[in-house]
Image 1 (cartoon, rainbow, N blue to C red):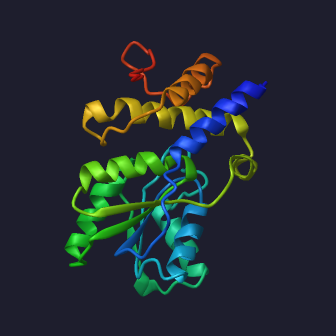
Image 2 (cartoon, rainbow, N blue to C red):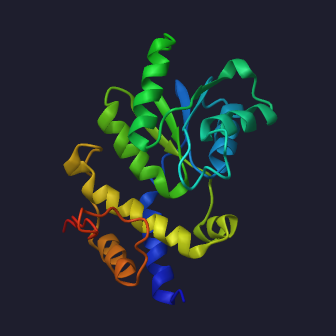
Image 3 (cartoon, rainbow, N blue to C red):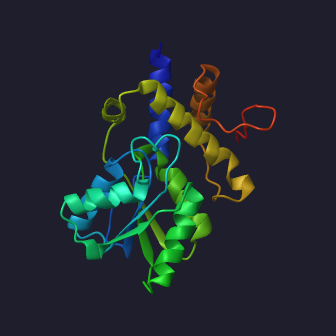
Length: 227
């Protein structure tokens, strides 16, 4: 059972994960692969609003997307964009990346090989991955400006769209843990995490929302909470 406190803590994590960047015109929009076709829909909407002249979708498959997107995340995203009226000349696809770091690195390499000058990136992810995507891109592509974006959805609406509240809470907890441990591993820049966010994360972890946590060789959850 999900308690009132659980929901309050979940909402605190949800709010923190979002960067609240105002979309603005950028050199390219990059849609990060996932199980959520809403990323592609948001990319298309921003393209049609003139926020980027080019879309790049990146992503292979993962255990959570293999059945839903058997041809690969980037392929399904590209197909979605074409269905929604984006011309094929305005869509690039990177089908190999299996994590956020590879999403950034492989996309950067593809754009460089294509001779496309990039000074700014509209980085599109799931709503609860905005901060993680931003921090990763800032680490791996520091010379470009990063503008984070996602589907403009409230937490309740996102939970309804996924259809599994426990899964969403687990994903939010896992995403927060990565913001705490990945900077020390060199995967992203470090960001200040407010105490009330860490408190919410720790309460949800104690409540058993731990299926998306990184673990050490002994099976213990990695925990680098910073106060």
